Length: 299
Image 1 (cartoon, helix red, strand yellow):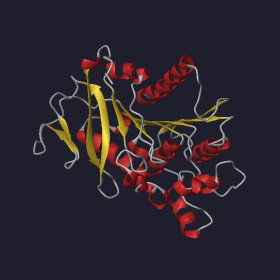
Image 2 (cartoon, rainbow, N blue to C red):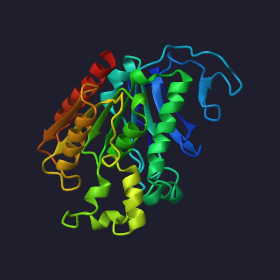
Image 3 (cartoon, rainbow, N blue to C red):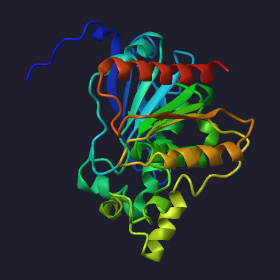
Image 4 (tube, helix red, strand yellow):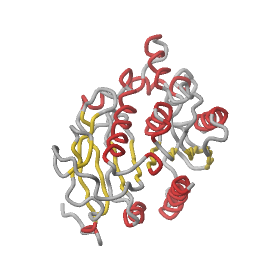
């Protein structure tokens, strides 16, 4: 298989580093893409949790903190997709850093990596994500006022967890058809996929597993806080996997608890779980999402 050359690709650096999970320090793969001129000659020191010319270096950053957008999924043993995304090229050209956090629950490092972020271990997916965000902020690559996150479906659970645990760490989040109330949804046998999901998230008929679900479920753990990121949550009326009312009730509750502190929006669409099939419609939606993030950064 031959890699097709991309016009202008030589302007960008793309590499993978390891950063410590916020919970137990396990090294978590983080793929980063940015313009080469932003951080010349520097690598991420995963052990020191900072960026420098070498692991022993104390050199200051060679660039001001940059806007940063992180993607995450982390469920079902599925790898986070790293295919070419034309929609992020304008961000890279403007000096953004784009990151892909390969948290436990995904399949990037095999079956054990998946098992490390499922059922009673699910909170590790969120802690891995927080570890990556902390590493980027500590390095000087970005700062909380310029840090945003984007995820879909089960990845939305990771963002909801992160927003509850560290609301001050992120400026904005976009959640597409997010799974935000596993503790409630998995107790409803009338939903089409409920029993099939027990193996990934836990069986709520077991009191210990229900307690585990409730301990990390984003909806169950919404609390008032002085700071909370801007959130654009999107649901789909014809989605059989994440029912439209799940993001809707999360948004309603989050608004009640954070009135006046941030913008928390719900966008309702008529598509299914995987969004629009037409490329031009998808790109238009992505443009609106990125405009939302930029507005949050500018406010």
